[in-house]
Length: 402
Image (cartoon, rainbow, N blue to C red):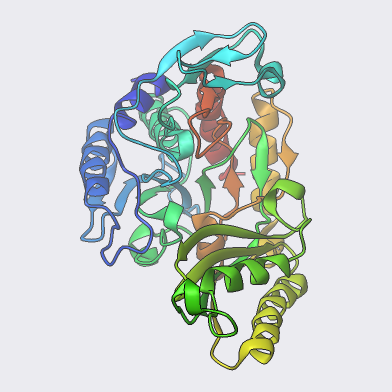
């Protein structure tokens, strides 16, 4: 099966993961795709295919004759899609793009010409402007599976053992929570879960989530003078203390940020959820201290217990875990160049399953899928990029024998 057909089959499944769920996976519907993926791996011909109780899919492609002693290489994708945009009833279409803005629907949703300029003359898979596409990361799964199918159909291509896995709940930061490293059985791996064709990433944000709660005192507004303490206004005052230029919309590359992604409440109680991100570990720790200092300031001003801050670390920059294994980056660069793609080593302004796995002893940099505008209704992916990634992955595993 070609990679585009496989991808279109996968995105027919709605697999949005759910923030703050008490279950794993966070949405039962993820497991429906997991069952389908496990069946697909069996049909392709992988061995040891397994869907575990947590919804992880594992499979293994044995080494070709004479390569059995080579260390196993892993390839990993994730099955869930982001909660940031609708993910059900995806209406994908293939569009030959030439120039200008690309209109997605009659309601006026479009992809802008500046974003599309590098893809002039290419065929794009786009949405109807009401859902995300699902290339993050069903494109990664489709590319890995299609590469495995190609290798099985071409036994003359020598390679060592290849371990394959697809994880649930990556988008909500829980993708490695029950990952079975022993069952996976690889000594190193790559996640295939990234952006534009050619990107290789082995640096990511250090990340934390902060929950900030504001405790007010609600009095009838007609009798509130010198008595009311409005929790909503306390939250506003807290936000006004944040550096205004250190938000996602004002930062790029290695610049860190604070990102307010949720707010709720009334006069009596309010809450903010913030993401803290920085590539530099020292600056990351300083950002956490800064948030606590802001809360301490308001507590001194209005009284102890006015503001509570709970900060939980999510993941760390995998760079320090990858740098002792730079042969993984060299191998990926060689694979891309062998397919006519000049690699671009860039930092991830986010995280992947590979970050946590690297800290658990499995060095795991990230490779692109070819997609653009992830987590939005303007998401798209060039069909040629997906086809090229299949070739790159096929070349990558051959590097394992050198």
